[in-house]
Each structure stands twice: as structure tokens, then as C-alpha cells.
Length: 181
Image (cartoon, rainbow, N blue to C red; front, side):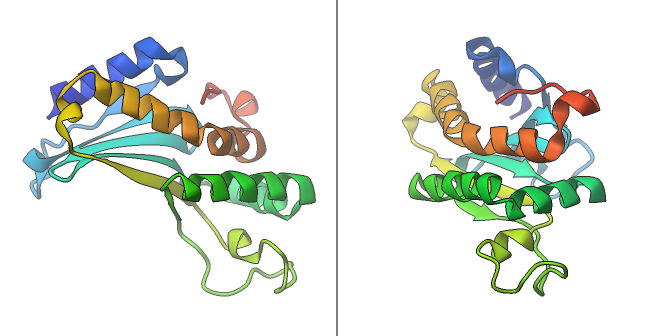
């Protein structure tokens, strides 16, 4: 499954140079379902990655901000609390949900200290990671060049959120990672 994933991501990178920094994981040492699953990431900035996963259920695409150091989590919360940036995030997430993406992530169980419990974006303030994912299915197109088109379309839909995360949280330009998406 590794070669088809590399081929798919090469097609995606050929279509848009912003997606050239990708890595396809090897599952040689992972015994459970190693032959059934292949995942890859396109690194947009520090801790901000587009993910492509292919398994027996089909193709799935996601944008994830995860494994963030505490300074990124603090920047995320400050941006969520800031009225204009916070509203842009809510708008991006609502649009993704209308397009069929599921929004998830690791969250604190209790309201965040230092912010009012009735803050309009209290639920988003609790996040320590943020993931938007959607299954693209496993129809006949998955074995054709159309698969790259579907992935590119999903990446385009994720672009407002990826831009928000890179500009407000990752500060990619200052941390040496490429900006993209």
C-alpha cells in the first residue's frame, strides 16, 4: 500500500507545490493491520499537518494541529479568545462541518481557568488539539487519477482552517517551517 500512497501524494504535490513536504509512514514494525492501512502527512507548519489515510474502508483526509507544545496551545487559546480571530475560526469550522468534515481533538474536561465559563467560544478554548477529518470513500475512482483530484479538493476545503492555524498558532515563518495550504 506504500507505493500507491507515494504515487498519490506525488500527483497532489505536482498539482500544488504547497504539498511537496510529505512523508509516508512505513508500517514494517507495526504488526496490527500493517497490510491493511497506509497513512501519510503533508507538513504545513510546526504541528499542523494534512493527513491522508488509505485502508480497507477507503480514503480519509484530515487536517490536524496536534502534539503542540505549551506555547502553541497558549497562542491557540489567545487567538480563539480574540474576537476577530475567534470568529474566523468558528466560521471556518462551521463551513467544514457543512461540507461533511467531523471536527474533533483533545480537550480539557473542565472550563479553562482565566476565561469566563460563558465565553462564546468556551468549547474551542478547551481544545489542546484540533482535527477536521472526512472520509472520501472507496468507490471505483480510488484506483484512478481522480483520487488525487478528490484529495486536492478536500485540501482546498481545509485551506481556511490550515491558514488560520499557521497564522495564529504555528507562527510557521518564525519557527523555520514552510508555510502552505
